[in-house]
Image 1 (cartoon, chains in turn orange, cyan, yellow):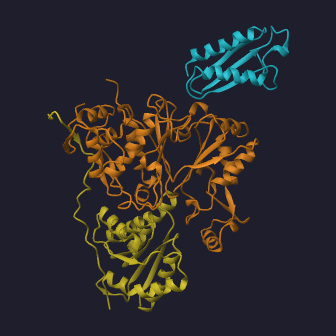
Image 2 (spheres, one colour):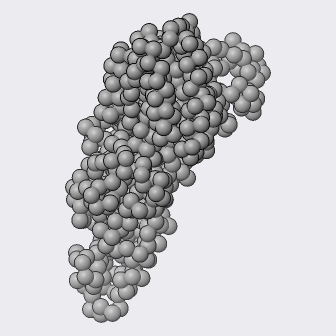
Length: 355
Length: 88
Length: 183
């Protein structure tokens, strides 16, 4: 396939620092040095997808800039993506552009929420998508550090999402640089997230979760898996969760990343992931009198309080989404709290046929 | 995880154990799960107390592996002297 | 070709799609006899109180109200809400949509106000001052740069009922004026 590039072309000094300065002045960088988007690099990126250069992935909110494959490739080059990872970038865009992900709301909200990419499939190692120790920061695999970054640059440069301007985010979060990690499928005692969402094991799948941040959970005291899961569930149901704000609790998922040691322990008593979800859901509630009177009134009027005075975090067990990843040090889990008005979306990658 | 490196570590510890009539076998070393399963063979041992104590042995095997293998791994030692983990 | 000291790169940005911008409709008539739509949201009680006050004033002026409350942005509830807003847009003569007092709720208030405009019904989106620029941006981004915006004080939600009633009374005339309601 031949590619005729149409993006605006400029001459810059052949000096990495000059390029970096230009990106800062132009507002199309993310504050961190970028790679030069030369035609050679862009064409190499485009060779990794069967999609035409001018194929439109979609219109990215908030400004509804048109995301062509070429423009996405430019941003992916800047992010440092290797061409083999480009299909993952495209899949992540496909996922967030699904209406139910609610990019319209999530790109403009005051919340810190940002797409958190969870990767399944056989390409994780080749692409250096981290799923073991430090998978959410610190491992430094190229795939993990650049795929999420490419998506973030697309949202900035094509969607026009800029904090304090078109995005009303109050704090943002570190994931806004880009967050992409994998599931340690081989250590998971349950079917992978992608399998549970209907994909085949041989597919490379990107799931975009609208997550507000990483919420650390730690324990050194509980041997009984039921006790530990009870505490985890109570931690998920923290009172200022978005899921308690003002809605009905019907939408949104909470991702629970469990380390492999704990997952073995939990699977011994919950061999089916659905039973684990059921148990977590059953315990993820708070008593209504935890909240001040004003909040109680809101929760009651929104139909959130059951006959026993319990306020469940979510309406259904499947809204709590366990995945297995992280190192072998045990002792920790991480929750990725939900924005609420967003449903996680998955897309399989589409790669170019070998030439 | 390079399996050959794990085998070398197991052999290093095996040589040590053979001095007391015991041996160490590698049952599994899976790079995808980062799990290494080894088993202590006590069949040739005349003096059981002479063999390195289970907790120390596990640490020594882990150290031997760590000197050769980059990154995390989970070591499972099946030691007939401990309940719950049958030896070879 | 590049000189020895420069390289050619492609820029990663694009201009937003050019749109002419839809016109905004106005009432240009007295309110008596009209069906006035009031859209509130489950999340914002302050706006529900103000809307209730305005409803009473509207009734006193000889008009009727058709009220709708949205609860969600996505999922079945979100779908149902957008469908309900569309159906409501068909039935009313003009509508007032609120409340924009956060990022996404402002976006969706604008979105639902545009539903009225798409039905050629005058609309007014009600936002708090902190989100005025955001509302106008969003209206422009979705092709309705002339959308009428009423700006209320911010923050609104934590104010006592007495203050909210004062705000309701103070801003009601401005709401009608923006909509082009004639005396």
